[in-house]
Image (cartoon, rainbow, N blue to C red; front, side, top):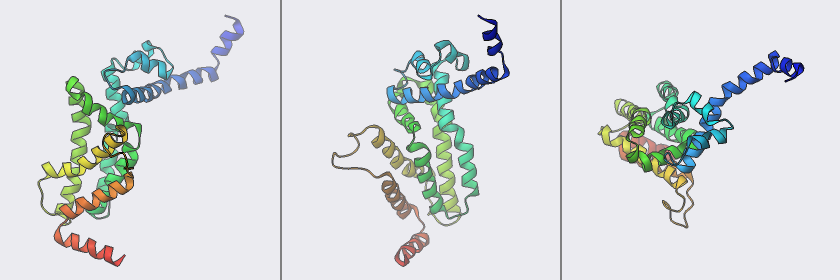
Length: 233
């Protein structure tokens, strides 16, 4: 190596560039892993494929993530579970009615998760959880339980304020969850969930589901008030 090359490689600018590249690697690996997990599933995705797509060596990948399982967990935390603190803060600060909060929650979830590549993780877990119980337990702890807790809090808020009728929250949670799972599956399993002549508009679908849910769980006075607002509009 020439002296000029040696000196150039050790200049502050080059060192900073290398440092930025090093800092970028975990994010690039997580992006590549998310793509491959969604495309191929957990079992079929190999660590060397993730490294190759991120433009690094397999050894580099294992410097950041000790196993494929740890890589998957990091992907879930980066894209879904790591955001529950932020989402809960939004819920606590929301000043509108509980029906409005429920609508906001469902639409925001679709925009922030459902429309993104991360929505494919739900389909992956539904198809592979049985074969990977440790991953399933992690997903249950990091995604399912916090997600259900968030929905329960919205429904409880509505009951406490007299906007929703009393209900069994253990079952009511799934009234909200089920249509959103269907929306994910319709996106990732084209031609299976919908009839061939049906083109699903996610926004219209969510609006219809919200209206249906509210007509079922709204307190009588709240339902009447909502009907009056629609009639006046």
